[in-house]
Length: 631
Ligand SMILES: Nc1ncnc2c1ncn2[C@@H]1O[C@H](COP(=O)(O)OP(=O)(O)OP(=O)(O)O)[C@@H](O)[C@H]1O
Ligand SMILES: [Mg+2]
Image 1 (cartoon, protein in one colour):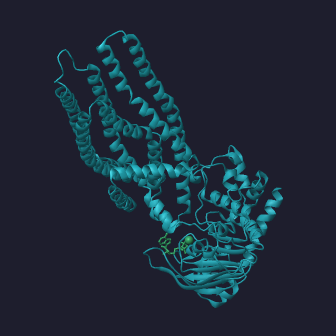
Image 2 (spheres, protein in one colour; image 1 turned 90 degrees about the horizontal axis):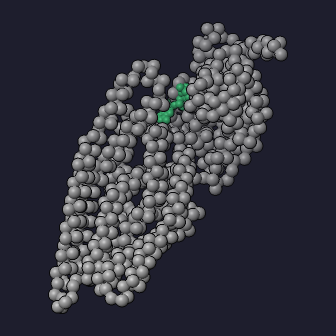
Image 3 (cartoon, protein in one colour; image 1 turned 90 degrees about the vertical axis):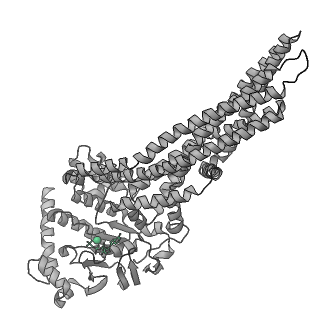
């Protein structure tokens, strides 16, 4: 729940910033957004802009042509048939000319919008994957997905309906230019009334827009909560939380009722006043024209065609008002949705990982040096202060310590999962802050404390360890990680889907998949964070052999609570409250009779022996024999 409140605060800040842009600035920002994400297809944007301007310029000749036709009919005479044919042909050509440019322009516009949406989504996916882990811990993934989705849809929606905005601008200008040909005063009068109508429109829409912001914020809170409950569905069912969560969701939906109801009523008021003002503008303009041209000579009549032309221009202007009234609120909403992802861009600019240009890591020996590092998670107490640790070339080091001692943090810092500008950690003398993160992670294989899988097949999930591995390599790695048997028992073998985040597999099975990935990756540095904690003793012993083979010739950092799994390592380091409490081999630490010896005593039922690791290897040998016997 705390996270949802956080989101609320965060979205409010975004919206407040966005509210400071005027409508024209918002329109301009959206156009530049389209321009940015159109990428290689920018030429097409220019192309359809020109096409829409031409289409609508042609379209705006029609009232004039219609007026001239009626005037010709009213004047009568011998030429009447020829004249009618001429003006009627122009009238038809007006519509044809419009479609000649509008149709292809729309096709290009919509296809470009597709590209804009694609580029936008890919760009944001790139931003998100380059943001450090702590950013992801501070931001709800449901809310982030919702924001990016909404923004991509809004921008592509704007991109594929730009013709409406352009059409309105050209037609609006066209009305006054056309009318000026007929009567400059009428044109000016209509311009003044139009400005009044626009003022009213924006006045209402500003209020509606603020209400929409409020609705939007509350929708974000609702989506985040829904995502949280659905992704934690097991907890919801297990703890019988469906009623409580439903109540919370219902409260979240209810929270946007008040602004929603107000906006609904205001929208109707806006349309009513708009319609009345428009009809009054018809009245005024036509009356003005008639009054202005009343004093005509004897035997002359008011040119009816001109009155029709004026009326036709006004009808087209009504269309512009309707489009603007419709699109003003849309534009503001679109701008809000598109730029609500501003926090992601800003975070990326501030803390995003953009180090592809840095040199790549070269690992020859695999020496790791933590050089007097100090680190604290944001706003939390320091986990390390002045911590030193040297891990020799191809040394296998076991890290032991109470929960919360900082073991995972140690490897997270090595992998640069967290921003730690003050942490100097070197691998073969190269400071990891000065090499590309991508190359750093290529050289480290991790079997994490908690393995989640992609919603894909077992085969692909293992292949993530090495993307170019063949099926044969994957199966060989799976066999070594003791996965093969359980995979073959599934209905579709390696092609079985694992379910969302791997929920269809047991914790131990997921861990073995992670081990198979690491075997496939074969990186020079290996990190095992409780790699076998979810396995039963027999499986663990079987895998231990594979892991030992995997460890050969590599630098290994293995974290474990179950000491028997790491007791045989070259060196054991006991961490306590971010400091090295003990450092030595299993034997030397037992002799020392300190923290390690106490832990060992507890885990081995009070029986201390320095030979324990070797004895511990005995069941492994038995298991090996058993397996060999099976074959
Ligand atoms: N993302 C985080 N934000 C804030 N504090 C954190 C975060 N991750 C860990 N911590 C804190 O840092 C300290 C060290 O955590 P760490 O995960 O390194 O412990 P650990 O030794 O791996 O414990 P365990 O054996 O339970 O896995 C703990 O006090 C923990 O609460
Ligand atoms: Mg841990």
